[in-house]
Length: 312
Image 1 (tube, helix red, strand yellow):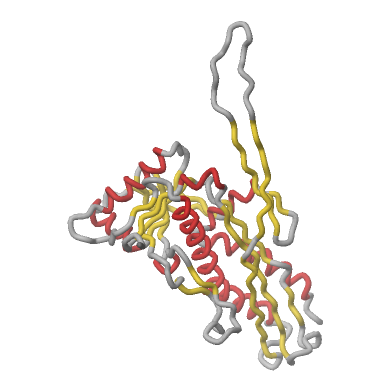
Image 2 (image 1 turned 120 degrees about the vertical axis):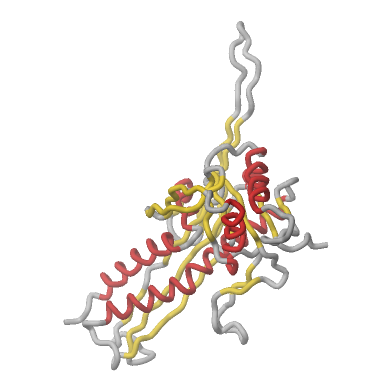
């Protein structure tokens, strides 16, 4: 009996969307997408609110009129990425297609898709935070483990900087394993742990001042990346690499509500060997839209610690 390819594609799509959020270290950022108006395609509308401060109360005239501005900025998801895969019909029959295809697509997403989404999000946040030039929010020239330096002091300075900007809500810290190791050595096993929720999954992570530390691989902690197109000479492997002028991030402190991230898989397409006109093989087309934004009025909420010296 022919396999129901439509149902299979829908099942894969829902599963892969869920796994992408759960496995990405930046998956917590997708929770903020609830603020966004999204009706399909590449465009989204992001809310931007501003209110006036308090005025004097007058016992005769009463309250001073205040103003509230709520605007929706239209943004476009710039990351439109994909790949197609073929499984030869001689190797895959109708009965084991689902199991094999799930293994292939799961591995592809785990090894390539999720790291790229994380690296892109972190690099874009870092780029915009640096460009904003907010005083005291970007620190350079610190390598974890350097003699006569304190990782604990560095991270507390980052938390303080975010708090000084008026952000008293929940914060999140993305930090490299090297930086977290220095913290753990410095605190000699006294580092606390908190429950951190991401994609509906609760995990225990280390924390400083009750701020969760999310361990993030160093190869996702760059201020810029280059995404390879998969077809140009030298880029056929696809994926991403560190940008030519990129700097390495030790850690990043930001409010939980600041980044607004969206990742959407376009309708996954599965073709049977009979439908596939290119080869006697099952064909799977994978396409993912994703992007991240920081509203202009929240750019001062992000603190970066960078390993290299400040560029001239």
